[in-house]
Length: 460
Ligand SMILES: Cc1cc2nc3c(=O)[nH]c(=O)nc-3n(C[C@H](O)[C@H](O)[C@H](O)COP(=O)(O)OP(=O)(O)OC[C@H]3O[C@@H](n4cnc5c(N)ncnc54)[C@H](O)[C@@H]3O)c2cc1C
Image (cartoon, rainbow, N blue to C red):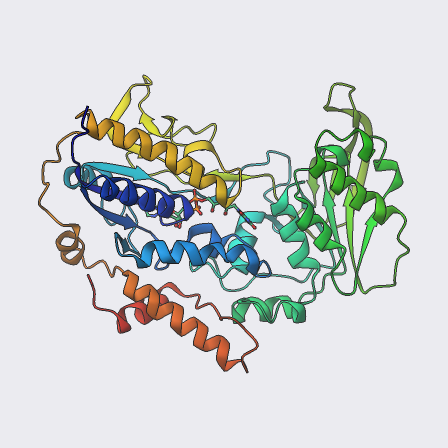
């Protein structure tokens, strides 16, 4: 049986890795089978790359190497980048559905999941996602972050907790060679922190870290790692179910034997501490935990023993929460767009023809960048199957291009050429720092848009 030749117009919402992989796989599949596809990639920020630009820590440049391949995918020009356009505000989902054969939602996550304990809203208690957005120079968070705290608590036992703890504990001078924004560097230089305490509810055998990120903590200059023997009752590397966990338990056990070097900062790892309350009347003064112990079934139970720590700031790194799209279905409990393998479904679990999801918004905010590629393959597989089966609805205004609509609304959208201009500008700022920095990020949105659009023709 010969497959029908496809001629498609597809909108993708969100230029994080998920949206870019989806566009690239779609372009390759359709063009590879002799069809044509026009793909518009809408992004609410002026720049592409989602959480790679605004989530991955500035001192993890090796991860940002993935950007090189995403850059090549967009630079091939089969996908048209349309930045600084928020779907649901500057253009509605309906307006996209009227113009494209299919819409793929890839809006990822940028907010913190909730941690519902008393005192969590006190001044001085923050979500890790907000702090991450600040240190990564996100244009929509305030430029200054208060760092007048000596004792700080970080709740969580995943890599985001480690990122936050590391950035807090690390001396600002050691972040200077990275692409960190100037306002962030100045903020961290003024930090008064001496002790960062990371708390996990479960034991060392239940950590959600990865080995490289954990090992890295022990290599921080002028920072001592402090662990406590009482937390290690269930931390025998020999009984760890995976090699990854064995490696991490060896690292943690190795730190038990380390003598403190007298460093000016300390990073404490506490396990078996379930957060109960953030303490303070008008700002954070401490945090209360209940000690836990293994329950014999792979989980933990409370022991009734209460412990308190005097800290001036609390960061909760208990997970991210997906970004909904106005007029698209949303599962509030799980923070995802409800879908069946990437086909978006309504309240009665019926597929909404022509509407798809991929990446973190499809399966929840867990997993590495690489996982968004396999996600995209599944979603695009279903999109192509629906297209070939004639199941995509015919768009009402198929001939309309969105540019007219955006220009009428005076939306200052950015383009791929605009990103190339901003990218070059940021790299030049890095070179100007006596070649010591790969780039210096431009933070304010209007500045990013102005630089993008000064070197690039709108709509090019
Ligand atoms: C703090 C942190 C550190 C991480 N570090 C690593 C790491 O070191 N290595 C690794 O492999 N993975 C890391 N990850 C995971 C990685 O970032 C994710 O796997 C990946 O970014 C998810 O991709 P995504 O495209 O689904 O979502 P995102 O990256 O969140 O991209 C979604 C995009 O959609 C845009 N958007 C949202 N709503 C709209 C709208 N209405 N209109 C238009 N655009 C919209 C957003 O602005 C964003 O650019 C980290 C994650 C976090 C949170």
